[in-house]
Image (cartoon, rainbow, N blue to C red; front, side, top):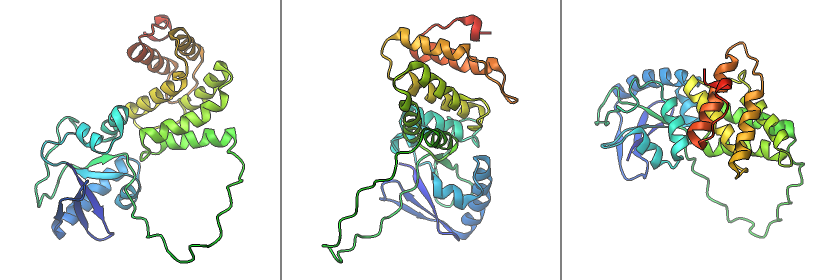
Length: 268
């Protein structure tokens, strides 16, 4: 079981994910780790080590660990594991990570897209008969708010696969009455001008959008209708060409759903 990196602002410590083991980290290690983690934080879109550790979990491997085993320990699922592996861009070979040995100055740090657990303060027993909180009567979020929440969640490197799916579904499901309207909404999220990270991570997140879009439709012909409609769309971007977006769509339809879209539209 991997060890979780902890940081109190001055020094580091290590504890196994289940809390059964811990390692002391020497001042020399802390100094070396600070440099390595600051570099890794910037590679993954964070300001520094403190911000990264506040938003994602950083681990070092134990004996027998792989990135996929670590992902399984934190329960982020197969698709989440793939995004995690693709996001750990510091590894030239994602299948090769090294077991931590006590005293290591340069261990392999594996970032897991799971927010660190924060200990909750104990519930006070004072005034147990106090007033009952009023029900939340605030208005439901607007369509524009749901859209922006979905985009922000997709851009957030610390968001889990489940959090991204929930945010995407909240936006798309507001258009449940019409396949056409749901597809138009998905296009807003698929927009190639949205920067969702490095190419592999960006592709995986767009595949998640496609999955949420077609999930309600059980008939293969209906799914094909949706994919064909997306391939008819003209993607305008200064960063990505039209064909690259069509390839993401066409390949995902073929590889995951065994749907053959018109190869003239994407397989070039």
